[in-house]
Image (tube, rainbow, N blue to C red; front, side):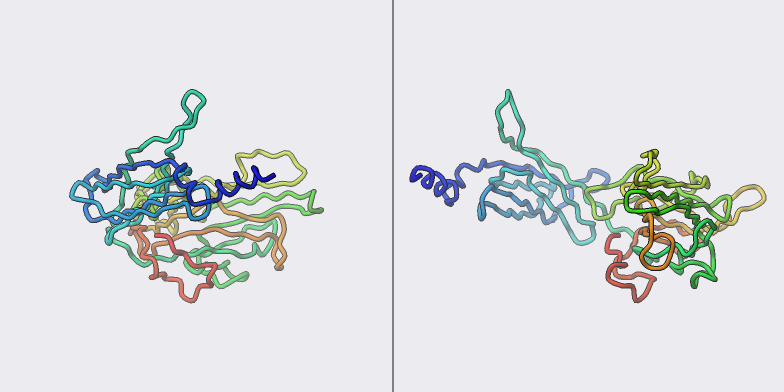
Amino acid sequence: MRGLLMVLVLVASPASAVLTPQVELDVTVVDEDGVPVEGVSVRGDFLGVVSGDGHVERQVTDEKGYVKLLGRSFFPVRVKAGKIGYYRSRVEVNTREVVNGKEVFRDREVTIMLREKRNPIPLYAIKYSGEIPVAEEWVGFDLQKADWVSPHGKGVSSDFLFRYEGEFAGINDAHGELKLRYPNEDDGMQQITRLYSNSSFKTPYEAPVSGYSSKAMKWFQAIGYDMDRRLVPNEAKTYFLRIRTISSEEGEIESALYGKLYGDIQYSLRSLRGGVSSIKFMYYLNPTPNDRNLEFAVGENLFKDLKHEQQVREP
């Protein structure tokens, strides 16, 4: 028993810090063109295995965009980089690997890309949550008003048309299908295939001119039923959207509004607040016709008096 206590004391003591491996990170910060960025504040969070056995290293990049971070860590090192005029980036660097069945820790070379703040502008941006008012009917939703169209809300233009069908027989027996279509044949969405996951600004600066699909979208969820998993709403997907599209007789786009949607439309199999299904989605909308800029100036939301849970704090 005494021997066991001695071992516990040794493990819990600050002296165990010498057991935490020391690793070195050679960090280079570049812009989107691969040009080194000088004067970037870089922080590395080194995490040990016991309380207090950690270290935060801060450095500023030189003219080559380079810093060296040195610390002891059993876990991936969290590296954050930021500079005025750029969006912050963060990465996790795993220094641990298994070689011939033995755990070893390696120094790493890391490149972090910072995206420049080009032209942030006010946009309509909201984390919307509400209730689909009726079932088995197409209901219009106005993105600029963030509300259902009359007579179900204060909306004026039907930018999205939703239709919900489902049945809730109990917590183990329920299913629901949500469909989305557009009022104009040239309205639509396209999935964003290139996302900047390490940056606080994750999407391209502008929406593309073409490539939008007006095909109706459908999602399905169920409890106690077999279903196609590909139809379950996926929060990881991100889309560009084009609405209120006016086209010439030749098929040329004369006017449209552009935006982006973070994730598939999320919905519940029942509602507890009077509607037929709870629904939520996060979107941005540029209200200026034909302006494809979707770089949101955080803090300059065109929606006023939003609740805390509706606020969007990502560009």
